[in-house]
Length: 187
Figure (cartoon, helix red, strand yellow):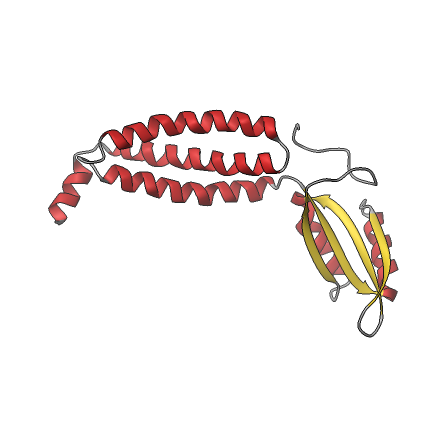
């Protein structure tokens, strides 16, 4: 049995296996980004990625399927490339961080004003709402920001009020109000 496995590796050029693996990583990463771009409203960019994604898939899949019965290792390498591509695609998407988020911060009424003013002085648009908690008056702050700057905003909030409750939601539609005019990606 081990001889067959070793033979399967030795009869196929390493460069071909490496090409299958790397091409699959690129293709699946493109697919991950394509889906995210389309969901975030970047349809043109998603369509362009789809073209390149399926072009790579056609050539790589035909190379693997054409010789899979004689060289099953190609299927295994193809599958490993897929799994790695999902991981790489998700990492790329986290790095690019498309879109906007709504950060809702719930804090005590006495800290709410100070927190809102500090955030405004750092360039954030903040809407405050007076609320009632279980036992005390509370302030709810609503802040929209680019997803890429979410962690920086959360850190700033915690630096000012470490007890603040923070909720983050992805935003699909945002119109009007005080938001940054720069988008960073052509839509």
